[in-house]
Image 1: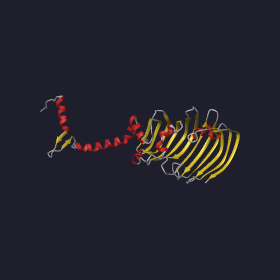
Image 2: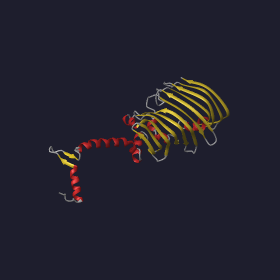
Image 3: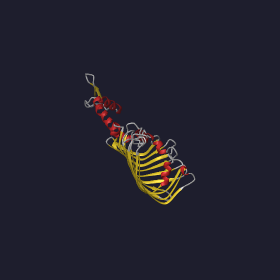
Image 4: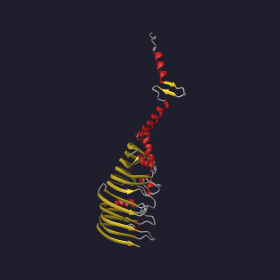
Length: 324
């Protein structure tokens, strides 16, 4: 006996009904006898694993990326932006074209590439330890003022050793510093190489740096090493050692920095040589200075000289001084 031909609607209804049926015990089964909730036990965890695995990729795009970078650099007083990032739960964090602006919206730091040797999982589980942070071809724009600078304001928490328990080592490779003052003076530090640790209050601190100093009419280079048993180095109970080597270093740059503590002075010339300075706790503080300097075209004016000026075409100054 031939069965009557079914319409398409009847075939669809019958197929749908065959997908699920209820057993005598009341359980609902899918076609093939597999309970529907067992499939969710497989699909659910699979989706969760995929979401967790893709989380770093999702977070490295657009708005999420900038918010995460801002959270990692929470101690910075300013705004942080990046063009790109690559990170994973078990791979190092790399930021591309990082830019930091101060509260006035002026660019303070631009970095071609920032590398953090710790993985995203390590940063999440131990956020107080940033590990080694490497800045490749950074460019600093420093606006030096009488009592402060934009760089000091942005990184105040780190420079004052008040960034909590955060630990990090910093390395700068092929850096540049654009240095400007309110009177229009400008200097460039190029080929800057630097290694240091993040300052922490009352903790040992060391710094190694070298760079070329370029001005409109002169250029030179320097290298320095600083070691102290606690931060800041000028604390009453701190002791440390500073070694500086220089060749044709413009003293006008040093004069600009010294005006913060010695405002009524003018210093110019080119200095070469090596100087070592050490200090120990005490009142007054014991200080020892040793080395030899050669200065060309030295010009010095100060309030304690009155209207006079000191000038030397060539000056060789061996020194060995101690204050106890």
